[in-house]
Image (cartoon, rainbow, N blue to C red; front, side, top):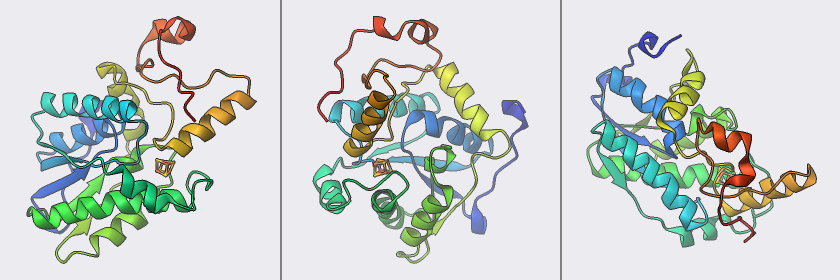
Length: 233
Ligand code: SF4
């Protein structure tokens, strides 16, 4: 299926504006292009206090801003309130991915998205989070609905962005745009666990800020990139 074969999307309940939570440029690229192609009026809401360290957070955010500007899509740069995120993650530091810490993490991001939607005249929220095959879509949708239900008049759009070739186009667009390719989910615990896993496999640990989609030179010789290794966890 090519880009032009996407189905025309409509918002639930006949709504005419969408607040789209975005986790990063690679995940939101296809989601944004699908929404744009359907003529839906939407705004990006970037609220991801889970991403650590800050330089990784800024890298992911800047990529997303660049792409939003390219499409003339309004971009709301929300707080990087990491203290709140760490407070809520207390006691869940060793939970596995897709476990209780991730439920907390999705809840927190959706709660802020729903609040912003409520205060700024949006009636529908959604997120790019579910397009990644690494994520549990049911878990994400549960968090999205639960957060939307806290505010009257707000609903969560649980559209499956992976279907109809969406997952493949996500990679195509990322390569076309040469997006920064993050190598861990986002929080410091996912960085720690991914590095442990890599070490156990005899692989190099994550080096931030070096890997970009479509970068064949890096793929062939990753050791050639000069970066600061992520050894802080
Ligand atoms: S692994 Fe990902 S979804 Fe889970 S808590 Fe960490 S950043 Fe959030």
